[in-house]
Length: 109
Image (tube, rainbow, N blue to C red):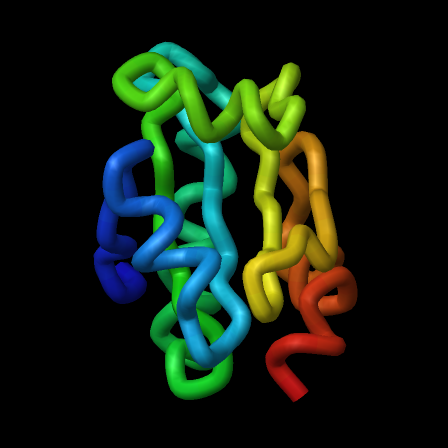
């Protein structure tokens, strides 16, 4: 099993994500979302392999409605990567590990 991803809340989002000095991946998910549960262990594996270059966090959209709304997250799972306070990439839907690695190559290389 991969590294446990820390949760981030609406209240912490600015300080933890937007002010980070390295890229931050945020997995927007919910307990009831099947595809979210599929992608979670893949992200935990990626976190284990790449946490030196990119911070991996997850946000429960049911408990934290403000941030997903601000970034127009309408479907989950949505995986957003933020660099220097800006949204740099958005990946919507569950994807296999190889596809996620390809999508994230700019940030993990």
